Amino acid sequence: MREITKETYLNWYEEMLFWRKFEDKLAQVYIQQKVRGFLHLYNGQEAILAGALHAMDLTKDRMITAYRNHVQPIGMGVDPKRVMAELYGKATGTSQGLGGSMHIFSKEHRFHGGHGIVGGQIPLGAGMAFGDKYFNRDNVTLTFFGDGAARQGTLHETFNMAMNWKLPVVFCVENNGYAMGTSVQRTANHEDIWKLGLGYEMPSGPVDGMNPEKVAEAFDEAIERARTGGGPTFLDIKTYRYRGHSMSDAQKYRTKEEVEEYQKLDPITQVLEKIKTNAWATEEEIKTIDKRVKDRVKECEQFAEESDYPDTSVMYDSVYEQEDYPFLPHKL
Ligand SMILES: Cc1ncc(C[n+]2csc(CCOP(=O)(O)OP(=O)(O)O)c2C)c(N)n1
Ligand SMILES: [Mg+2]
Image 1 (tube, rainbow, N blue to C red):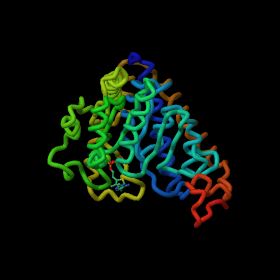
Image 2 (image 1 turned 180 degrees about the vertical axis):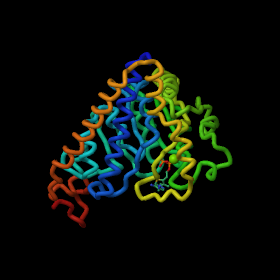
Image 3 (image 1 turned 90 degrees about the vertical axis):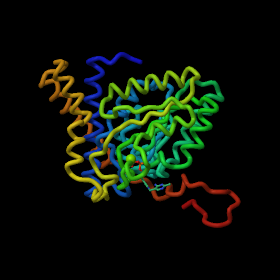
Image 4 (image 1 turned 45 degrees about the horizontal axis):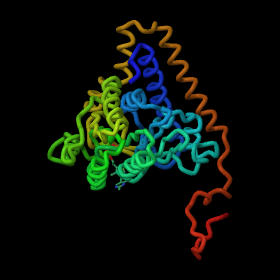
């Protein structure tokens, strides 16, 4: 893995802050009804993405995740202006405005979605890893899912096959404590989701998800194992989301105090503290970063606002249509 240096920390600070502010902006324009449908934010979980990206080889590795998926493609190199435009439903978006919040995708950047079916991406991630192994490519697939998704039966079928075939995949549960309003405590008789891997003898363990350095180390080991033929790893990354499940969540299932306790561990604050303690940047330099982040978010908003909606003629162009199916002609 690339060494973790002062530059890494400064980059982590800037990128994580950008992801946070990018989504704060989304929350704001959602209330103004400029972004519609569901909107699930990543607020609080940023250290997982920062650590993973540091350990990945972004020229070849893949990522697949659930519907909490706006900032991952940005991390993998997709233009954030196009991500914001997609959320606005504009033609300049990553899927021409036809996908929306839960379906960001970029084949070019090996970001494979954006999936709304809870746990649906677990076998898909293993399938992509199977393809890479079959064609002798040394890419590794990082497959992310939530603690709720970990309780889907498909996880077990996938784990069994992935271990049996030693697929180059890292399974990663972003354990934020809740599946909508249902806590991990209420879902099973133990909270150590990583133990689900042990039944398949898959290397598995917990990771501190509020610290990007710890996350990067865990991914580095897992990716190395996958790339060198050692097969999958299961990481149970303990994290927390500060905002509701989606924008329409009244959050009756937890207290304000609980959220505040976790905010004390905020990954962005932790990274900033380390920068300050080591005098890796002056107050002025930090202000310059903050300003750059603000300007980038503004630029994304402006681009999305000024872009056009897709023409109605393309509405059904991406819908599967069987040539000989006699009903529902899709083309407008
Ligand atoms: C198969 C399926 N069942 C139920 C739902 C409704 N649903 C959407 S998100 C969600 C909770 C998932 O929680 P978790 O996997 O912990 O992910 P998080 O939202 O915390 O990131 C549920 C039950 C769905 N989308 N798909
Ligand atoms: Mg969850």
